[in-house]
Amino acid sequence: MQRIQRDEGTQGSYHPSHQCPPRLISSTGPKHSIVQRRKRKIKKDNDDEQEVAELSSDLLEFISKRLDVVGFCAFGVVCKSWWEVYVRSREDFLESVAPMAVLISSHAKRSVNLYDMANGNTKKVMLRNQFVGKFFVGCSIGYMTIEDCRNGEISLINPLSGHELNFNSPSSALQGKPLHDLIIFIPTLSFRNHSILTVCNSTHEIQFFHSRHSRWFTGRFFGHPWTDIAFFKNQIYFVTMKARLGNLTITESGIDLNWLVVENTPDVNAQNMKLVASNNQLLMVDFVPNRHLNIHKIDFNSMGWVKQDKLGDQALFFGGNWGPSITKPGKWGGQSNCVYYLEASSSMCYIYSMEAKLIEKFSLVENPTTSKLYSEGWYYPHQCMKIDYHMDDRAM
Image (cartoon, rainbow, N blue to C red; front, side, top):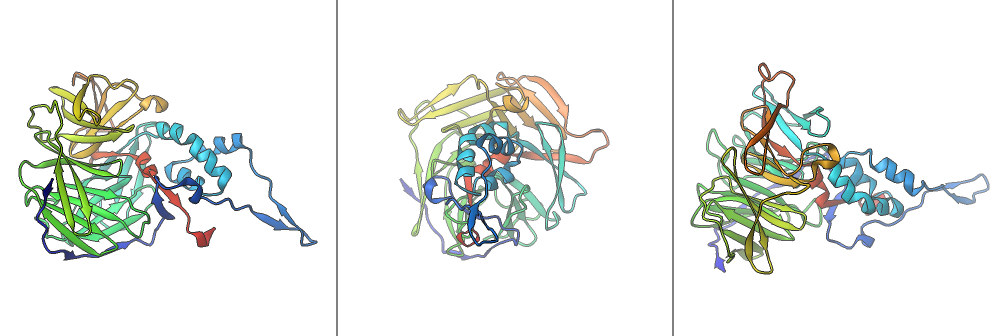
């Protein structure tokens, strides 16, 4: 294990927007403590209390299937019976939620467009602040990560709920491009105690911020650039362009970097090497359109990479520098065993075979020749559900 040199912490600040969702708690916590059944009661004229009739389980499932992700999460905290329906239908609901392509205009100041792959509808979302001098860095657990180069601020925005978290950046960004190559959101027990982790390859720095301490901790790494980081089973993993895998442990005293010894590591030099945490698997993806598609799964028992030639009923969604994801598109009418690819500065979506050959393409806008919209990457609404929404006890 390598101990990363830790610099003096930089004072920082963190402030959620006023559009706060219910308190968040880790999905790994005990379910019986998350939701307490609260029966609504009414009083009759004689002051006797009578329970309101409950909806049937079939009707609740019918209602839940017609909700969006935000509504479905809120559905699960109404009472115990609703929570039971939520748990029972959660997996099926996840499979029915399609990824969205994030489209922005070169003239946009405060809006983004979300193209729903399930129905082709585009939803325009207005954000609180303008985009001038800002850059989209990626997407992490249902939040778009945006870096403000003018004000030195990092914002995490959920475009569906409107919830926003803001952090002062520990360093000055270079004019004309974002400072950080990677930014991930690390869920904790409460939305008041969020953590984020950033990676800057140009300065070889890892920067970690926990809102409870209101300060940044900075460490340095050496060697090849890091191309992706992923949060998998409460561990933070990273991969380099040479397919070298490691993990990070963050403690009160610093950051520990541990390079993992993994057999059958491919001999590559891939600037777009990505990690995908999906279906209790950690995958490494090296994809270049019309050239190659290499997907490897790590076997933690033998600590070796195993090449995957097929995705079965799943599909890979890949979008430039944004993190990829693997989902099952059959529930919403998409194709399986293929790659959905968004090209930078384009409003087209391309579908590639497992041999990296183009099999289909279509426009995400009505008139691509005159449209000023272009894609930034994929947004995955279902990733919001990696965190359970828990209402404040005072509101129950």
